[in-house]
Structure formats: C-alpha cells, structure tokens
Image 1 (cartoon, rainbow, N blue to C red):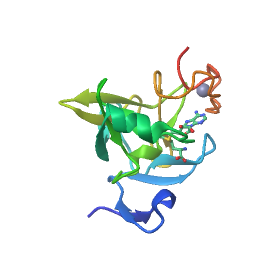
Image 2: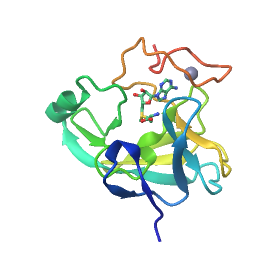
Image 3: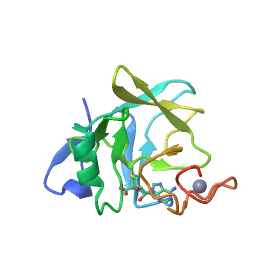
Image 4: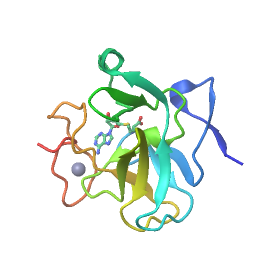
Length: 151
Ligand SMILES: C[S@@+](CC[C@H](N)C(=O)[O-])C[C@H]1O[C@@H](n2cnc3c(N)ncnc32)[C@H](O)[C@@H]1O
Ligand SMILES: [Zn+2]
C-alpha cells in the first residue's frame, strides 16, 4: 500500500508518495526527497508524475516561480509535479548527485546513479533547467560548481 503524507505546498490535499521515499526538510534547500529503503545502483527509484503541460502553460507557470517543480519531457511537453506529484518533485539538485533521470516513451523516471541507502537524500544534477543561469547552488558538495545550471 502506498504511504500517505500531507505536503505543504498543497496543504489541504493528501497525496501519495512513491514507495521507498519520504519528503522532509533538506540542508540543500527547503524540502528534499529521501530514501526510506535501499536503491541499488542502476535501479529505478520512481517515476516523476504530475500534470502533463504544454509549452505555453510551462511559460505561464514559470512566471514568478521561486521554486520550480516542472520537469521537461521534450521541447514541447513537461510534467508539473506540483499537481498530483508523488514526492519526487522535491528532488533537489546536487553537483555530486546520486540519482539521474531518463525519459522513456514520453515518461520521466529517476534512477540510482550510486547505491542509495535509507536516510540518504536523493539528488539529481539539473544540468540544464529553467533556472536563471546565476541561480546559486547550495548543494554543499566539494565539487560544487556554484550554480544550479551547468554554465
Ligand atoms: C524541484 S524543486 C526541489 C524541492 C525544493 N527544495 C522545495 O522545497 O520545493 C527545485 C527548486 O529547489 C531549489 N533547489 C534545488 N536544489 C537546489 C540547490 N542545490 N541549491 C539551491 N536551490 C536549490 C530551487 O529553488 C529549485 O527551483
Ligand atoms: Zn552544487
């Protein structure tokens, strides 16, 4: 059975978390996504789910957004994890990530780049996202490049 939690961005709506993850405060930024079980290197963690939106709607929702929870599928479509997300929308960026994403048949999946143990925060290299190129990175990795986007 899927675990249930209340996510602060949608105070009144209960959402289901993907199995094996939880959402809690992160030293990187705001809330982060944490493993509650072991994910072996190379294995799938979860699908990034939410509302599928088109380019025009992406542009509209990005206006004034402080934190971005929209992930691109291709140059036209994206998933907005703020609407019906499963906790993976809280995966923070790290310059030394333990996770990665793959797009398969128009769907977005997270994979473990390394063995991930219970209690570890799951992170991803945003590489190229809709963040301003000057957005400072607070991942704390010794290899931190200083910005969320790779510039
Ligand atoms: C997908 S959300 C991640 C969850 C976010 N921490 C929250 O509480 O909603 C992406 C946003 O988190 C913040 N963020 C994620 N990783 C970051 C990092 N390494 N340094 C600074 N801010 C980060 C940025 O504001 C970004 O737009
Ligand atoms: Zn960094």
